[in-house]
Structures are given as C-alpha cells and as structure tokens.
Length: 217
Ligand SMILES: C[S@@+](CC[C@H](N)C(=O)[O-])C[C@H]1O[C@@H](n2cnc3c(N)ncnc32)[C@H](O)[C@@H]1O
Image (cartoon, rainbow, N blue to C red; front, side, top):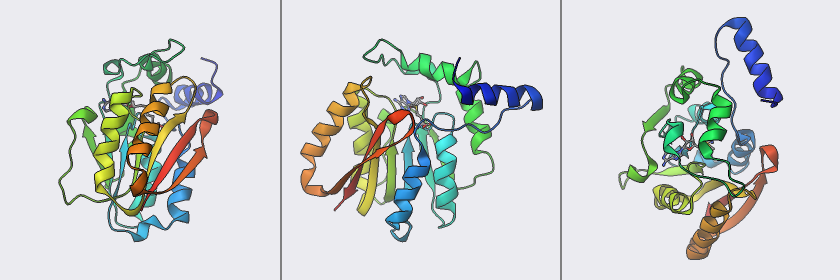
C-alpha cells in the first residue's frame, strides 16, 4: 500500500494501538463549503448521504448539520463483499474498500469514526430497499454508493423527490474514467429532470475526481 495517508494512519494506529478517525474519498470540505455559500441551512430539511464507507465524510456533514439542528441520514450496507461492481479497468469495488480497510471491519471503523455524533441516523441497508416517508425533506444529498447505472438511478430517486426547492443533490464520480456507468446514469437523469434543475455545477475533489451538484429549482 503506497498511499501516504494510509501509511501515516497505520503508523499512528501502531503507536496508539487504536484507530484514528477515518477520512473520506471525496473531499467533503468542498461540499460543506458549497452548502455554506448557498446558506442551505436556512432551508427546511435534513442531509442525506448514500455511501458512507468509513464515515469520514459523514462526520464532516454532521458537524455542519449539528449547528443548525439538522440530522444526517447515512445509508450504507457496510459490507464490502456485497458490492459486486467491477470498474472499466477491471478493479473490483471490493478491492478498493479492502485496501483502505486493511483487514478492519467497515462497520466497526464507521462506528468509531461517527461515535459522539447524536445527529447521525445510520441506515445499515441496501439502498434499493430505502424509501422515505412523503413528509421527509432534504436540503442536501450526496450519492456515492454503488457505481452501477441502475444503483445510481435508484439512489437519485431516494433523494430527489424529497429535495426542497433550492436544495442541492451531489453525485460523486460524475467524471471519472473508471466508473463510466455513473456518468451515463447522471447524464440520463439530468436530461429527464432538466425542467426541475436550476443550476449544474462540477466540483473537483480528491484524486481529481469530479462530482456534479444539481441545484433544484
Ligand atoms: C466509494 S464508497 C463511499 C465513500 C464515501 N463517500 C467517502 O468518501 O468516504 C461506496 C460505498 O457504497 C456502499 N454501497 C455499495 N453498494 C451499496 C448499496 N447497494 N446500498 C448501500 N450502500 C452501498 C459501499 O459499502 C461503500 O461503503
């Protein structure tokens, strides 16, 4: 494992004999900056994340949301082996998760990272089984779950009908050469919902991967 961040974390773990809080794949600071710039906290509703992994991004969203009495719904199976996706270059999603987990349980790392936050509602479930009550409102959603087209489409419809006017839905890996199904799914969704989308922004995150942020009219 040549990733310097992982090496550093491993060194700290060896010294202190415990895990340090996990980071995220995305660069959630940029998402929080966008939320702040748009003052989304003034809108009525909560935050949702699909694909929480080790909880590194979840806590960044939760820290912001807690200042305004808002909850963060975090959806994930927390089971690396359940994601059967294979990237264009032949890498399995599971191999990516395992490389970062280094033998640890995803669920245990997530629990440790998110401990101490009372505004995170964790839903440990396949996103295909999730449906929110009609009255649920979201001000911000971020989708970074399974990277297959059918899942991205599924996850979009978990959030979009509940997103308030002026709210924002972000999708990670919108432009990343190795997950082309995300791009395909998002382009179709943008086309289908063009009349409901006020603005489209692209945000460059970690590893030069682009997320797309859709502002609802
Ligand atoms: C790329 S990781 C998310 C990374 C996270 N956003 C971050 O930056 O730290 C994708 C996550 O989606 C989850 N996942 C994959 N398929 C899923 C499904 N059908 N339902 C719920 N979660 C799923 C995986 O378990 C994994 O934790």
